[in-house]
Structures are given as structure tokens and as C-alpha cells.
Image 1 (cartoon, rainbow, N blue to C red):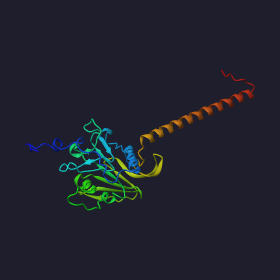
Image 2 (image 1 turned 120 degrees about the vertical axis):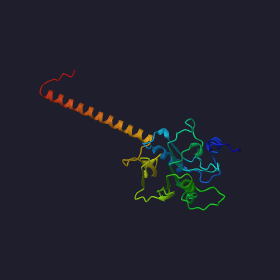
Image 3 (image 1 turned 135 degrees about the vertical axis):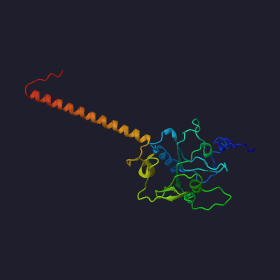
Image 4 (image 1 turned 180 degrees about the horizontal axis):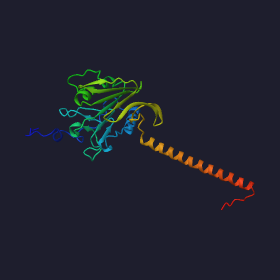
Length: 262
């Protein structure tokens, strides 16, 4: 490749998401059912009030290309969110991957769902050969410098949160399985409830009042329940009015007065 003067930007000369592979069937840790359902709940309850919905991109199990010097190097986070970027690539296409040198915006938070096969890498407890790509922890902490990194153990239902502090991740001491993120005006916590007809602890977002953010389905269910309650209240009022009218008619007749029911 010939050098130009001035040099062209990486966005112009390096591969785009259309050029890079979006799948790696040989990659270990392919999603199980929990890894499919949990990210959907995170998606459905992630709605930072200080960002328009069309300036938020969330993804799960999507290739994240992070190094312009090694364009094929990528990680595949279980879930991540990017703020201040279009939901569509260049506002026109669904993403095949997320390529940082094309997007110009790095993820704000990454969440990994711990699995026995990936736990050590997720927690930065593995050593790598110098010739191998860096592990997730190094990529998130030192290369992309993602402000927040959370891991959730589906077997212990334990949430751990790490915040970038002075260029290194520092674990946040949680007195309860909840963590408020002021930049998002949202919190991340462990919720015991039923999702997709499965009752267990789940990771989801909560709002500034401490209430869990409702998914669209839950909002629809709540509206339907409120409508049912309104209909029932109206039925009860109509029944009470009917009974009151019948009592009044009975009282009039006991006095020898035939009421005019027309």
C-alpha cells in the first residue's frame, strides 16, 4: 500500500464491516439458551432517558473489531451498548459487526455472562502468548478503555461491576446486587422474576425511582390489566346503580306509588 501525503484516515483505507467476517463457527463458547434470553432482556429494558432511542446501539454476540493495526482481531461480547451513534450503520444498514475505526465511537459498557469455559478470560485471569491477540479484559480496559465492565455469573447469580479508574478497572463494592450508572440515568441489577415464562434471577435495568424498567410486553400487559380493572370498576358502578334504582322502586311501591319507569 502506498503512503499518501497527507496520510488517509483508517476509516478510508481499512476494511469496513462489509469486508470483515461476521461469524466464527470455530469460536468456543457458542450461546446456550441463557445466553440467548438474557441479552434480550437487557436490550428490552435499556432505555437511557438522556439519549434519544435512535442514538443508542446495543448488540449481543456481535463481532467487535477493535485494532486498526490488526484488522482481523475481534472480540464477541455477550452484550454491549454504544451511546451517541446511530442504531444503523451510517444511518442506513443493519450492522454485521461493530468496527471501531469505521464508527469512531467506542462502547460505553460491556457485559459478559460467565461460562466455565470463558470465566478466566472474562475476569482477566489468563496469560497470553505475546504472539496471540489480547484477551477480553485487556481489550476492554486498555485498548478500548470502556468505562464500565460488568460480569454476571448465571450459576451463582452474582453481579460484579468494574469501573475504569486511572486507566485500570477497579471493582465496585456492591452492598446489594444493584449498581447505579449516573451517565446513563439507569442502574443495573439482579431481578428475581419471570421472563419468557422462566422464573429465576435475571440481569436487567432499573430507573431512578428504583423500579425495574418494563419491557414492551410488560407495558402492554400492564395497560391491558389497567383496562381490565377500569372495565371491572365500571361494571361494579353500573351494578351499584342498578341495585340503588331497584331499592328506590321498591320503596315507592311500598308507599303505594307506582314509579314512572319511562
